Image: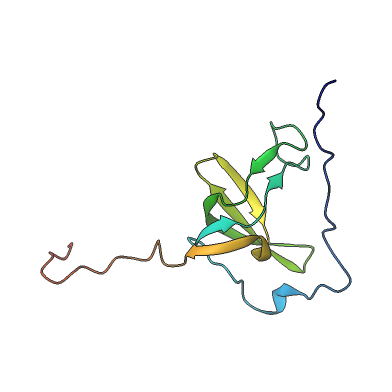
Length: 116
């Protein structure tokens, strides 16, 4: 008996109960270090990988590289999961901020030379 892959389950992108996120600013910003709160599989839109293939797993860490919108209602965050060599679009509810200031310019410590 051969083992088959579990069927791919597609979530609905939009619900009548969803609020329009675009009335406020994005929750995440470019440069935020984030962690995936759920597994993400290829729904057929990621080239070069089979449909249903895991792109990232829960707990994988990446960086927000851009902020876009979807259906004129949601913010979508392009997250570079550098260790997996994959960029995935995700919603804020699918991500947890690990470090919001990881890319902020570093302040020189006292006694350290200031770059010129």
